[in-house]
Image (cartoon, rainbow, N blue to C red; front, side):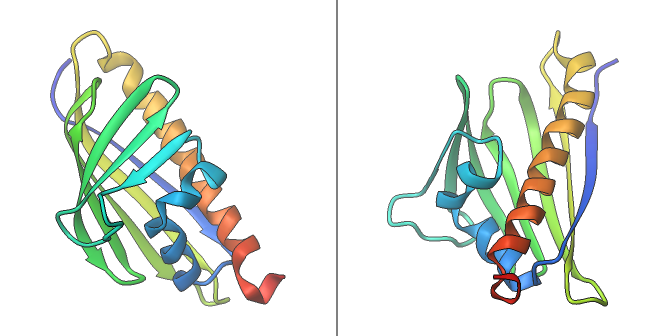
Length: 147
């Protein structure tokens, strides 16, 4: 019953890839469009491979390290501190749609701590789906083409 598990969610936005990308990188916007209550960049606010971000959702605090930055295409990160998961790695792939919008594919792999394995797979599928959808919806509203 153990082992590596995964989630894979997709959302589509009318917002352009550049708008989606900007929101993804700006942690100050995360509490607006996601279920995250608080988010914080590394000191200095740098966004580069190797920098850290901290998120709080309810009482749960997680810390992540950025591992991939391919402008307007791919964002990757790994969990550094997570009370429920180990070996957490995720990527967010952005693909421009023919109509000018963006397909957001957010997927990750992880190992859940014992006692949480049965719960984490459906929970993360829903939770990350809501984050991808929130990003997609907010990007559509933030895109100057739709103001």
